[in-house]
Length: 86
Image 1: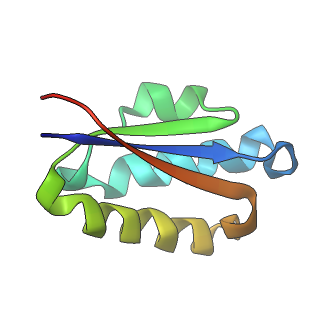
Image 2: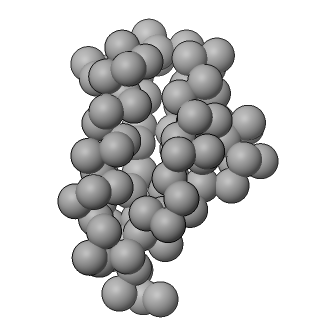
């Protein structure tokens, strides 16, 4: 069963910073999950990484947290993990 990681950003994050984070996430995710570049480019206050295999959920969350740290957005983001049928 695949999982979804939703990253919600506070208003203080700003759409430009959210897009920068989203675009890099789209490029770095690889097999850990799916974030199409079109969605990354349109991101304003939330990003959804879909089709995260259950076995890779921990690694995917770790990558997201590393990228949030790199973009200095850890205090402005909330991660929500949801299950979905694949």
